[in-house]
Image (tube, rainbow, N blue to C red):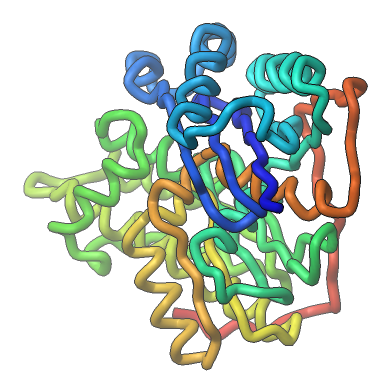
Length: 344
């Protein structure tokens, strides 16, 4: 008999609910974005995000259930992102999930936000199976995760300062581009020359970690000393290339180091077309398979939360009403010494 999991996601500024069948089929997915609201401040305001979640979470859940054409009696479990994220935003989603779990008398399962992005790739590509390396890259995360099985996650590399998405957003602000900055940079870069502006790549020799704070500083300096005739399109294209080159090279290196033949992308920045194209080309050259989710599964969504919870539900786990929220929780590290990179 099929099991339906209701997922709830409120870790940042997207209020989302979804119904997923047997951990693999998205029956319905609803996302209420706050991007237009936060654009006036040029970034997410945590208190505002939390208040909007309070207003939207129940209507979004109702819409997801109606879209799936199922009654609460058919829901097998409620899954919710409970870590990491903006604490006030997380509390809203978890409180809603607890109420539904109690009212419907079904298990409650907490999901790690970064882990959920791994399952987004698996939802998008039914052929993706363990083991694989996933690059989770967004405004808040830049991590290389080795996925060896359900519940078997370890970080191969992570950013030492800014996340890639954060670098793109802040650099976009320096260029006078609207929020959210990442999509604005991508659109502008289409008409630019990625070799026009010499920007640094932080390779961090001997490590799979990332660093993007220096790139952001380099953009600020380049803008300050710009000469007449300076093209924003060229700066955007050069910035995007500097980010993509390092993300692609280190992901391929991580797969080789871990000895796996599959690579996946996840997170909001994974929706960037240049990153997806660069990763697919590099994986093909390295004889690796590459799974890139569609845009709606790259950005924060509840379908990936429900999918991530299903393996735990299948073995009878239940976090219960004592489930807590955690603003910061890192996945365990995995390492095997130094590496060598084939640089772009």
